[in-house]
Image (tube, rainbow, N blue to C red; front, side):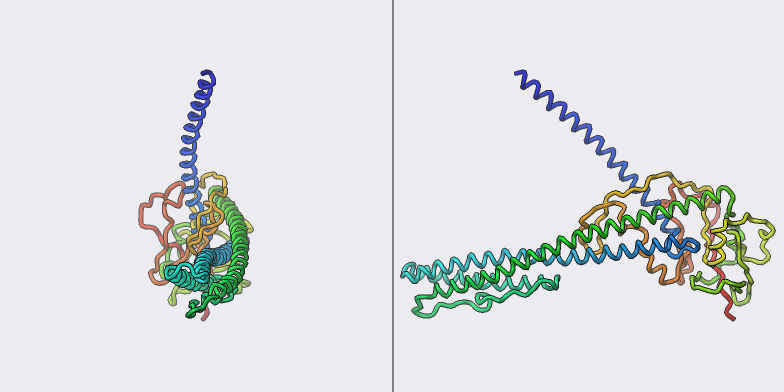
Length: 424
């Protein structure tokens, strides 16, 4: 009685601990979802700012290209894994079909032996014929499955075509040694089946190797993605802190005047050793020397020219002199929330419809760098890219701002277009 009471107490304590663990799991799951949501918005914000060429930050551009290269490696590894896995599944089906074929051929040999011993009569002959027809059909199906596997993997070798698959064995009239003929067919089928087992094992080994390659490629891409995220975070917070401290000047109203008709920006390399002539419109030509501040005036008679903006730091001034790309407007009052960058579960890739061997929510395949190559090849920059047909500029969604979007008292201004060099 005492032992039963003690066991009941233990059971009650275990059930209570299980209930508390489930409650804690529910709370942690909710916090994990919030964390993933915040990380997604922050990563989307950095993507809008840094995607494409980033003048003055060559390290960010190099690392961005490295992320793209690692993602391409992941895609290739997953494609190869998908093909080998599909080939292995088909060979497994062929294996089962060969076994069924051997079983039916064994039944045919049994009834043929009975007929040779003058036992069974017409019933034995009918069952023998039925078993042979099924075995013949199964042998053809097994060979067809092997050919299907070769469509997915070029490493699968062609098997010997057994006689039972080429033609249906038929008993001759008054033949008493037909069971010996069937035994030879069974031996030939056994040799082909041994070849299939060898190919199936080799395909299984290749599938395992491909799976390991996918895991390794995903880990490498995840590490590079995390490194890129950390670099963007440090750069972003550094620029924001300099804006708030006044080390660099924030863009003013005059920076956005007279830029609506300007051509789209260009990232083509030019000789910046001397003063370059730029133009906004065929009827208006401006001669702009090198600029040493973030406060850019696009009109010659702007009232803001009388103000003396604060000088830029040396590294940003050098970047400004070497590139003519648009400078993005970053709100000085924006405060990025503190967080710790971590790696969670990998989201399954839907590119090829193949489940990923590993899992992490901070997946390199679901990041914001998926369309970088297009941005580079088309000459479009980050955040300030333009639609050549609509002539509109996408705005940053409020959900991508952790602190919320600022209230606007008038319609949003278009971002400035970079003046183009006068080639005339």
